[in-house]
Image 1 (spheres, rainbow, N blue to C red):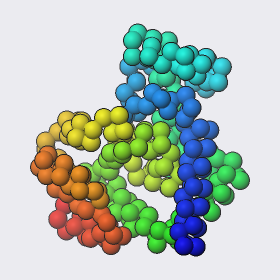
Image 2 (cartoon, rainbow, N blue to C red):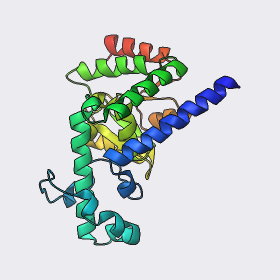
Image 3 (spheres, rainbow, N blue to C red):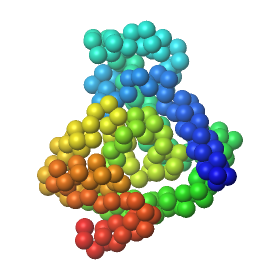
Image 4 (cartoon, helix red, strand yellow):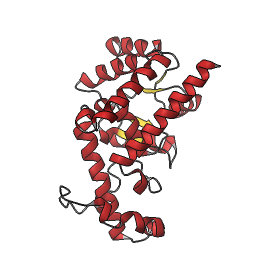
Length: 240
């Protein structure tokens, strides 16, 4: 019971940190109700203007969206443009700081994050380390890519990748959210993007993911124990 209480407390602390980080750096309040599946989905509305001196807090986007969110899908060109600028800024932040968060964050916040990660590793029995080892191996291969399909909204997905130090293993262009669509639709989007001449391996833990992989005739690698990452790594060495 004490362990359950401590674990719940830690997860709550991480949840609060995720929200604060997403709010501070990734426009959570502005974009949480108008999330998109991929970072480039709004690129067509980006006018390419210089963002170095752009004042996101004073451009009226938050107030306009809270009152007129439906306009984004019905000809609200100015709002869509401001949304696109925010996603471009997110792209810049993620790409520039995914492997050096200490240069982005305040010292106290960064130290707090390191403490959270250490405690998370303890409670999760270092799950993240074999995962990083497998992701790192895949990244180092010139003909391989790590692609993530997440059921969380895109802003939260990118935040989690950054704070759990996984951002450097996933290019932001290879991160997809299926929060507002289906996993099948999103996987098909990935397949259409990379084509049929690639070898795909779907890594997941749910039976729905396994069934979808079978439906799409894709090999599935289940991850329910940390040792499964080691097995995946061995398979990558010898068979793929």
